[in-house]
Length: 64
Image (cartoon, rainbow, N blue to C red; front, side, top):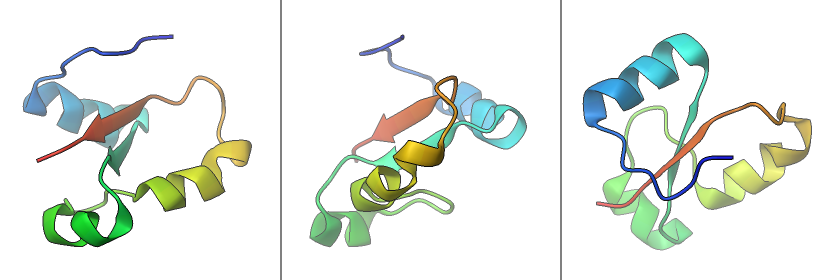
């Protein structure tokens, strides 16, 4: 399990587009509305999907 690793934007894009990584806004729902990137999930959406995700899924959290 990887954690606390800063991922450059170009690598994050590659992982999301080709490897199925998930991009997740690390802010609460209200603040996410202002900083939402295209295709990103909110923490709540991630929590809803988590039980069905393979353990190998990379999750990239961001804050702006």
